[in-house]
Structure formats: structure tokens, C-alpha cells
Length: 281
Image 1 (tube, helix red, strand yellow):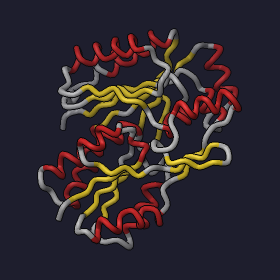
Image 2 (cartoon, one colour; image 1 turned 180 degrees about the vertical axis):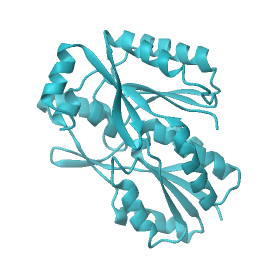
Image 3 (cartoon, helix red, strand yellow; image 1 turned 90 degrees about the vertical axis):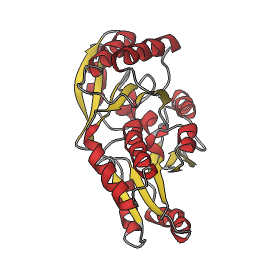
């Protein structure tokens, strides 16, 4: 049976990547004020920044519901597809739980909790595509994707804690202290959660460069694909410096610079940047 790979909009894979690898993306709902939008389709990070500048208004995100999953997947299953659906970490969103609820009533649907977000999640999705293209069954693709998860490294450095503070994800005292001391935290996915793993100080250019150099010291990085993902607000020449560091360290077959979507943006704010990759088996 043909295998369809699907994921949610938190994967931060660009439209051209989704088309290239034949991935169907399901958007989360993002509410800004009294209006609801489909993430990545009807709202952009620039819209979020503009609303915050005007009104200090931050969006709320809502997981894809079990009924939305059922309504989306049923026609494909009726056409003879099996589906492997890969979601943002279940520790951060109800998406995977809701996909599992839908799967209980749909034969041929295999939900996968990627334990990551952004292009860390995207790396797991692309591994599922590779396994699909090898001709594996949906069950085998899902298990192969789960086996790959522990190899993925997802981390980011933040320019500001203001968005996390306003969104209730850190205290005002923590945000104020970080601002006064010019501290730039590094967040890393550990056991499905984002945790502070290091704190940098100095200008953001200096922080970006130090962070990427340190990440590129990770042993045995898989050179097939590396992402530099950011939420905007980074000078093009700085991004080129970061590209050069990755290129020299890993010589990746594919180095992709991508922009984070509305979910990461609304939590982390502008100036957030991560280098995301997997290690060899």
C-alpha cells in the first residue's frame, strides 16, 4: 500500500521542502485577538511581531483536534493509503495525543511522537520520507522514525525572554535579570521538553557564532542535512558567517536556512536561532 507522510505545522519545513518530499502539512490554529488563523497559511511571524508592537498582543495556539485528524485522513485511507503522521513532542502539545485518538478508529494510521519541534521535528519527518522511498510499509516507516529520534539534536539561542515572559513561560524576574545581565539562554530538547542547557553573554552576533561553533563540535554529525532555523531579525551577513562555520565543520550535502513558523515565533520572539542536525547511527 502507498504510504503518505504527514506532519503538523510546527515542523517549520518550507513549502518547497514539503512539495519536494511529498509531505502533507496539517496546520495548528493560531488565535490572535478575536480572530483564528491557520498556522503558516493565514498568519506569518511578521504578523505576530506587528501585533505585539502595536498592542503587546501574543497569539494562543491550539492543537489539531481528533475530529480534524479524522476528517483529513479518512479520504486518503479510503483511497488505499497508509499514513505515518509525525507530531511535535507530546510534552509540548496535545497534537500527538489527538492523532492517537483518531488512529484508534482508523485502520492504517500510525502516529509518531517526534519528541522534538521545529526543524528537529522536520528532520524526523524527512527520515520517514527516506524510509518511505525505500519501499517500507507504514508500520516499518513509523518504527524507523522512532528509532531515529534519539539521533536528532534540537537547540536554540534566544535574544530575548520578553515573549516567554508575556506568554507566561518564565517569570518577569527571570526575564528582567537576563536583560540586566545581558544573558542569552540556550534551550535544548531533552526528553521531549525544552530545557535551558547554557547561558551566553555578549552581543547576539558573538553569541550566535559561539553557539554554532560549539554545536559543530558534536561528535559524528550526519552530513546529509543540517538546518539553520531562525525567527527573523538576524542580519544576512551574520547568517552567512553561520553558514560558513557549518560548511567548514561538517561539509553537509545539504545546508538549509529556514524561517521558524508562528508557533516557535510566538513563544521565543525575534532573534531566535538554532542549528539542528542528526548524528550518524
